Image 1 (cartoon, rainbow, N blue to C red):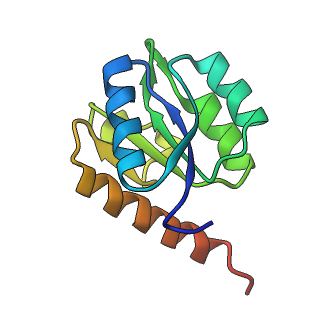
Image 2: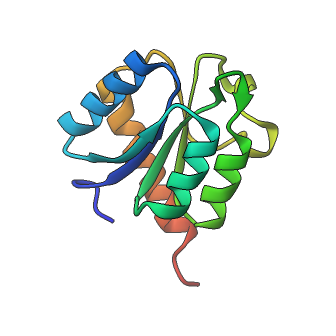
Image 3: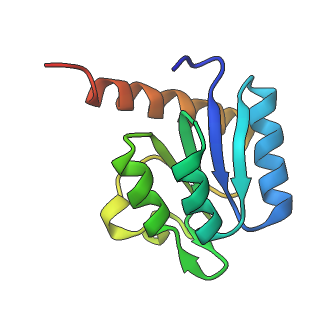
Length: 127
């Protein structure tokens, strides 16, 4: 997993925001491995897609992203939450995880991806 070419699972129900984030990721040299705006499809994609990192909208069509985040956690992939609700909008069991306050700039996305990868790698280093 290098910082230069990540494959990203992107879950965002607002199509224009999803397109904007996908464009930012590509501009940063990453690629979108899969994207959706639905929880059930996100679960299927998480199970069946190779990806290095997930960017998850916290609230997808009025439902919390928790089941998708739990699955991705069991796969040991890093997650960045995107929220328009601030840190309080992140499901309680995932507070303290990396998050982006929507709307965000490409520089903020780049910094958040870099710091998320650093902490994920350090958490998974052998003792």
